[in-house]
Image (cartoon, rainbow, N blue to C red):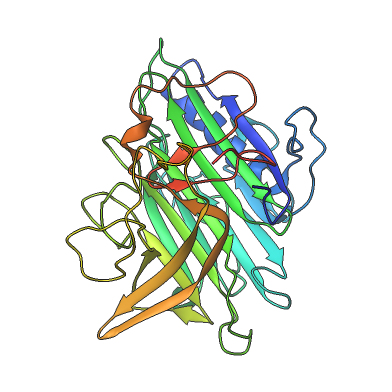
Length: 342
């Protein structure tokens, strides 16, 4: 099934460094390039995909802070707590998720651990910023993911990898893996939803998730009908609804199989695939939210599909050789090729 949007890729990127610190630097630098750099084309053979780039508004490498790109190499990524010299970078994407709207993103290395980061998405332009602190944001219009652990842990013998895709409109899919594990340690999705509502009613139909998980099978592993905010699995899933946070909402992907939860019941998907051809259906991933007595369908994710129970990833080898044909993380298929095999 061909994707609805055009995608560029940066898959199976070896970010292994001499130690945990340099591996973390490599990982954050690859994330920066995923937002603003040239990616591989659909055949993943040349670095010719430059659509959907986010514009760099300002940045700090811990020594210099201005309106230019100060992350010119992995060594420019420096960690420390807020108030001390460290690195951060801020991006802007016009006409995202809808024409006429603008979205801002900040990656902040505000931690003493080189395997953690903060990630912020705002619908209002952040301001200021210095070598010791990221730009200030309006809390009522910003989602702040703090202390997100994006690496499993350093191992000399088991290499770490980053993987990512960016669509022609600016959608982002990113994750990290390490040899010796059969699951993604960390993952992030920004996806402009397909929604029947007008921009007047819902000007920011953007699905955002940035989370990590400490055990198999992935960072969206809770077997609920929708991936709710969960302190158990460290999943943080949010919905930007207009100019302010949808406070009190539990928002996430509607599950395609039955569980003990009563909300958003859907039909069962067999983890063994279809009994007709053994393949998995490209079942659309719909986003719903729950607050008080309301259960609301918010929209459909583009080129991201529901998947069966992620136990089918058991025994996989990371990284696989050749061009990726499909990728399952948690309970979703994510874009990894121009014709993913699902």
